[in-house]
Image 1 (cartoon, rainbow, N blue to C red):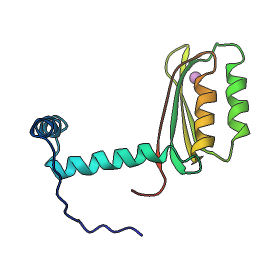
Image 2: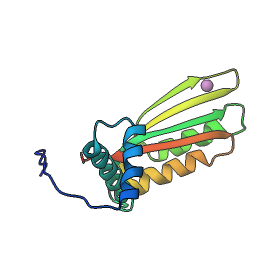
Image 3: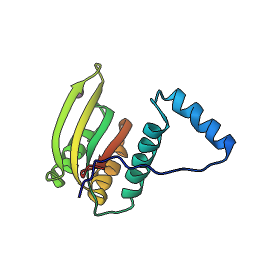
Length: 139
Ligand code: NI
């Protein structure tokens, strides 16, 4: 159950670590330490959730590629059709005469989405690939 009431708790740490933390709080533009701690905790929980292969996540796969690369378009289409239930949307942008940018929005289990991302980004002709996702449940 989601409980959004704020709870207080004390944190102890060495002075030198606290100074470094305060620098980080300032550099990242946080209003205060609490906000920074909340963000760090959320980040850690997201990281941890990746270890659960059954966890539902949603995110995007970004691919830059050369559309002249032999068989690449056929391969990409074949791969995407094989997991059509994981793909929510695909948008294609013609970036230059030769290069394309494809944005694939995905939702599925960590294991399925990860496998899809790996298959696509490792294709010959893909010059850059990036995968970003977060758990579907709010944390
Ligand atoms: Ni294109």
